[in-house]
Image (cartoon, rainbow, N blue to C red; front, top):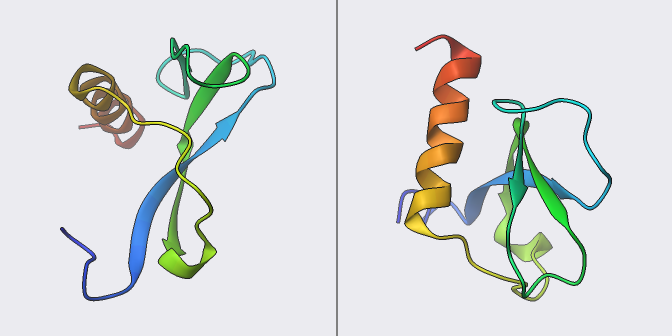
Length: 78
């Protein structure tokens, strides 16, 4: 794990508020386990202490992770 020794994780904001911005800034999640329809705010990337984490609410698929990476690449101009 990239940040295993640092005690931090890299995270993206998650919201249940409908988003006006589309991809690459936001990505709608199709996850039946979440209590509400949700969007990943790809442009809001943070490094957080693992001590700030609550309980796990879900997991993304490798396909969704690929879409997130694609969105990040579009934002930074790669």
